[in-house]
Image (cartoon, rainbow, N blue to C red):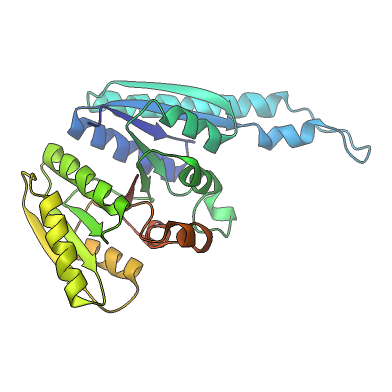
Length: 273
């Protein structure tokens, strides 16, 4: 049962999308929002110690600026929640953002975080470092929100028969039922017999769904691209899938379908655990 949604914000434009998405989700679920905005110590910590006999610049003003910006981000989230009549409590913290988010997520049922942070335009990585660190460490289901994503339309459930996708199916049932959204099930398999078996399994898992369920399958192409394409075709507002597929060790070191979907999807992606 999802009762508390943790929304992470750093005040950036992508964080604004995550704020809107998280508040809209909480409103649809009748849940409350717990907000977190973190002042990263690393931005000033490394300059405080004089090295090579070079004296660091005054940092009090920088610290004050970062703190004020974090508080402003919290206020913005609170205003969005009030507009939707959603209970919200937001706190500003100092430290390492991904570690603090992991710690705070233990008190919530679901996490909503923007895919790209405030320095997105200056980096070459495919997702923000805070998001990447958080997703690797957390044990909670998390929704990764790209810029401009909105909570509209059906839910696309990507099912591969893994333990994570079974958890994703149960989450999809809860979310769809409480949001009044249809579920589109996508199964990818090059083997038609295996595809049929997976549809049989997911039908059992979705048997209690109170909303329409539609099915789609594909046998050609990259799984991550097909999942995103299927979600677009369904006009989905969310992709739900397991955080890890059938070969968890392989995926951790080499990258998984779920990681590829998060990087490329224009829609929010819920990684179930």
